[in-house]
Length: 504
Image 1 (cartoon, rainbow, N blue to C red):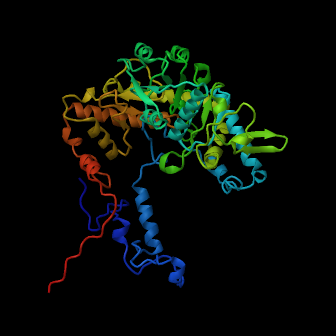
Image 2 (spheres, rainbow, N blue to C red):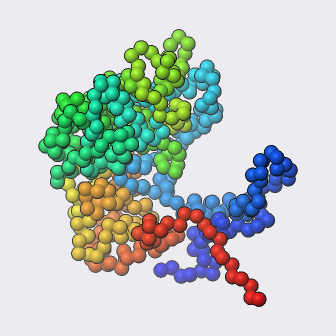
Image 3 (cartoon, rainbow, N blue to C red):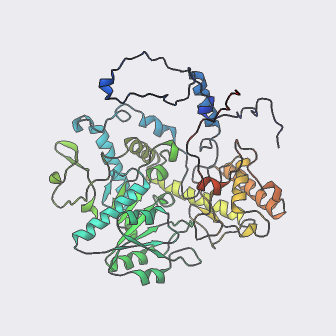
């Protein structure tokens, strides 16, 4: 443990209070002139109490958020081993292009004649997406992976209704992302789980036994959430199509196969693509997502509005059903406008920078990195499945049995070592799972350093150094919290402490 300091700070790591605790009355970083507003204009809704915002000068506000930012882990600070999330490097060139005038300041309500360049960019991105996936159509408007997933399922529902059929079930492997059953349920289907055998892939006999005339779709992630490629995917597609259902692919792990495998060649009917994973646009808090959905010829007519077309008048968006070309039967629309322009620019910049061979190499390097991690650690950490992996290396807690150390303890010590923990306890089919996705962004030197840390941690756990893991992290700005109490009794807003009453 480090020695306490007078200030409470430790070097450049500052002890920072909540902004409401820092604020005080009568202080502001902005001068606003008094504006007299009559009660008549506010219809009696004039505020009578204080607004409750913290009072800070501008330097104080800036320092507060800079200090908070230093507490964050980021891909720009180090390796980000989260599994099933593809936290890759975001090239600065992409950011520069997304900020160009005409892209950064384009307004969704601008006349289409004034945004021909932006529409041309979307059309080019659509061409790349359909080429990479071997699918004839793509819907661009979904705002993220789960939104795109819902779009694909709604497209399937529209196709089934157009056939005059009533299909109520969607089959989902038990190792699937949680958004799969959520999207199917939201779209009005009943979810039926397909078991996974010990080798971590779909059990064909279990799937065959659940297929029937009431099945609308089978949803599969390939590579799956165990980091394994579904080798029976062609047979799975044939089985699903034979019973009249559609084959939905979760594209969250497309980073492992882009440029190597075209999902359309595997029999896929619909697949969402996480631009913010596979094509490097900022992930999570770094920016909005984007989840275009590629569609097979059977589903293409039901793609949602708006539709982007190019004719003698240039590029234009078809916004209304009455204007759609013959044969198109859009089920509706997913959002008010036409997608995330900034994400489109970043993704296309990534594609054009890499080219076809570069995208293929990125996938190959991601798979190579994961297998390097797996091969370097499986003698001291236990892997639940035999053989090589795809882009994710999966370990379980078996190597910790008898040590008194849990998967959570192991992950928390990583924070003291300067790493964000890997994904833990997912996929649920692996007990005490630790899922690592190094991506193609990391050098061998970076991976070797990471592997050295995990090897040493595993050996220390096996050597009985339990105290090293108990209560970790010790060096983070905050210690480990009681997660059970936090989830059951969350404190969602700050409340000013009650001041003691003055003695009479």
